[in-house]
Amino acid sequence: MSVAIKAENLTKRYGDLVAVDHINFEVQKGEIFGFLGPNGAGKSTTTRMLIGISIPTEGTAQVMGFDIRRQSVRAKELMGIVTDVSNVYTQLTAWQNLIFTGKLYDIPKSERESRAKELLQLFGLFERRNDNVEGFSKGMRRRLCIAMALMNKSSILFLDEPTVGLDVQSSLIIRNLVKKLNSEGLTVFVTTHNMEEANQMCDRVAIINNGKIEAIDTPEMLKSAIKKLQVIEVSFVGSNGDLTSELKKIQEVTDVTKNGDKYRLNTENVPQALSNVWGFSKKKGLTINTLNTLSPTLEDVFVELTGIQPEIRPPKTQRGQD
Image 1: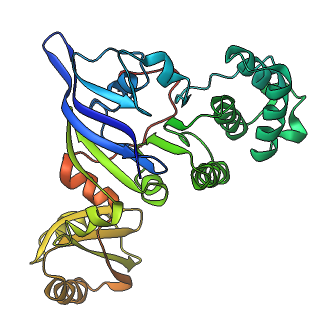
Image 2: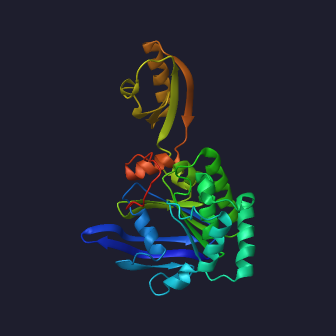
Image 3: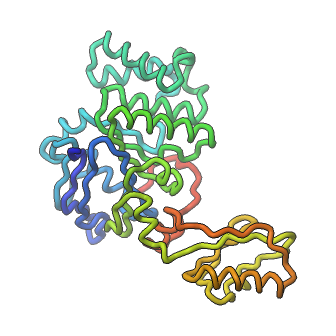
């Protein structure tokens, strides 16, 4: 498998601020590669350098074999770029948006019309091709954005927060479309705050924090690396109030997080912690409703490596600085 992206000592400074600090990684052709990190970690800065709109302070990067500094135009010809902010023209129809995009890429008329039809069918928008986009749902607009990015038959797709602000059905549709495109050979570089999305979609992920890459591996390998961190999930029948502080006092429990009506208890000694939880429930006169042991999740890996809880964010109305 050959390399789609290669970054070597890639660095970006803004005065005294080092936004990206000598990072090194490779993305293989044909994989879905996730780039994860908290706000301010350097995700967007790295992506802007890779797509050629920000010049590195130090280091180099190649995209599809082309140097992003010396051959940025050649590299951009092979890219599809979807930002987290919709760039569709709402006063135009879906068809007109794709045809206009094809003209920007200087695609011949017959070819761009054929490509537009193919993409509208693939993305489930062909029946709405003559409708103005202002009447589209967020999910439909997002699909159209991705279709527009693929008008030039991109070899690599950069996706920024592909499902942020979308409903569950729209998110599933987009994830399945990305997987389908990837199965046909498209390389995908995706930045996301959604840990479950990264876990389901990505072949490998990189976690960046404070401008440095903390880890790169498959989701399962990253999770297995912190298997010492085991989790017990418990809920109680009719419990009143928050039991977090009391559960933290249980021997062999290192931390407690409340999620809805359930509590997640971190431990390095599952058998003893389970016994202690039963003892706690009897002492407090509580009836256990559910009790499960869980393996670490990608979110657990994220928190372990960054020390920062993933955020629940509203959809952006304008681009931030990451």
